[in-house]
Image 1 (spheres, rainbow, N blue to C red):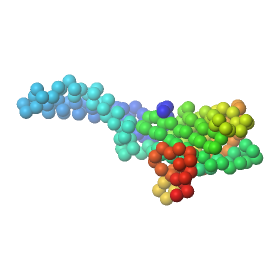
Image 2 (tube, one colour):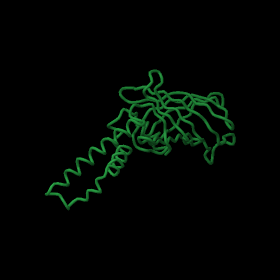
Image 3 (cartoon, one colour):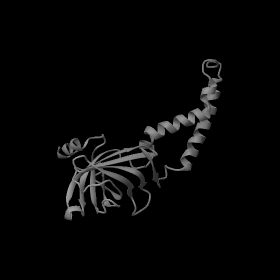
Image 4 (cartoon, one colour):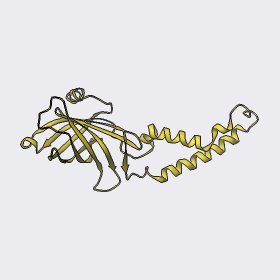
Length: 207
């Protein structure tokens, strides 16, 4: 996974400062606790340093805590949708997108019957009225049995977020660079928070 940008309140220096202050306070409190006669000699006070506690807090928040203790959009899972492209006169093809996301890192893979793409950078915007969505750059590679006109290329995708009956939907535009030079529209909805393969995701969609 690679890092991703976000304008969310729960990202940036202020969060690290808060964890630092909490770690210092926790370390001071725990040292006072282990100095009590009942515990003295049984717990190594050096193991309760602010640095150790800070590292533990960051690890827990990065892995799990941000999902419940922040307002950052959790896009983890498998998404299914359609791509309408200018290639071949406006063809529409099914696609499957898989998102792996933590507090500071993200990876997005998108598959069609002809190609697979992966992100090289991403930005998640959810704190700007009128600009709530996901933007990313990707590299797309053809499958082994893809048509000869399919070549490796780069592209940029901009997806807006819209809630639908409590669940997020993504829709927007993309365009590709040299080697492809097409553009189109993408619509996606999440079918599960698990990571599914292409065929399994399409079957899940039919259920």
